[in-house]
Length: 328
Image (cartoon, rainbow, N blue to C red):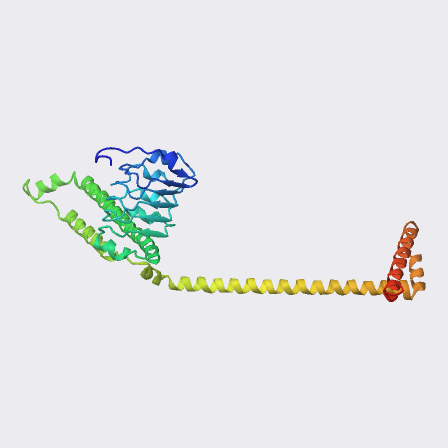
């Protein structure tokens, strides 16, 4: 067993097989990010059962990861740029020390599985993450966390914009009222230590009220609540899909009917041609001789010889077919 402060070095090359890098049960306290990033084909990373407390600064450069297992560690927080792992679909954080998740989780639009069992989560997060005891629960946890982080990030962005506008207004008030303040004070006989105007304070109070209203409006909804508002859209999509499927089946049925009809007509034409050839060659040789006269001279001899050979073979075959086997 290594000591507490000792770093464990692992040969990453020996742990890579095809697209999987298995670094589990390695007593790691730091992740060899650069060594892992050198293997561009790695899309599955297993770091379970180690002594990790954080992922480090450069972990977000592993943008090719599709599956990440960080279970059974002591991770206390995820990096703020964790959302740069845009291809991530499976994230296992079972049995860690996470209290909250970064807002950049909202960028993981492809995330389909998230396991957060065994973490001392904030009650708000725990409410919407759920127990994650089944596969369906982990799938719902992934969707809920992504939706929650998207809504929180939008509220934070609105607060940042409000704060920036407040700072701009304060600076503009200072610039505009800076030159007039001494003159007005002297004209009114005000003392130097008199109170300033209360307009900036009123603006601050209004902005605080707006921020509180935005926080109150933030209702972190699970997947079912979020999807309730989009029920009409999903119903329209389903009806469109049904129409497309019916149209495709009707096209297939029509193509099958056309193909069958063409096959039947082709077979009928073949049978009619055979009957005509038989009637002309064997029943009415005079008609065949008249038809030969209309054939060009350079092809007449060749066609006549071929038809004679064909006639002889057919007659021989018919005669053999009609004679009983005893005479054979």
